[in-house]
Image (tube, rainbow, N blue to C red; front, side, top):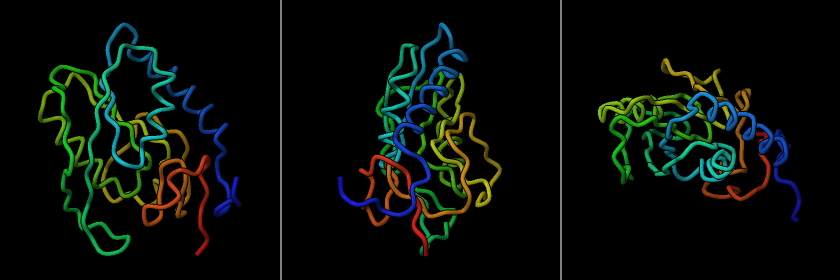
Length: 174
């Protein structure tokens, strides 16, 4: 493997162990019920794959892509859905799988957008939570790891579309 990019925060083993714990919790919380797993593209793909291994309920999977427009690292609060669900979530238990909850702006919009389709429930499962950056009232239901205000890459997280395929999560120092 090539040289490590940034300073490692979480190894592949730590991430997979946490996915197993959260997957067991979700399986218990929805025991006897189906779940509709919605991955947010592109960053959540690796985390979603891990979570799916440990959720034992019958499950459907789907994907969405949305972004908030703004300059640089600042969100404008305007959210655009670039790829919508293909399936019907009416009266289903929806679990949104996210890579990171930062300001919360995009995810709050997605949750409201999906709520208009009358699912039975909507929960958020995020690999990383960065509460110090939150701009809206939003709390994830299942959190892999809480982190400080760091610029993180790897395990689906990118810098200019690079580093998503790193098998760990690290941070870049400015």
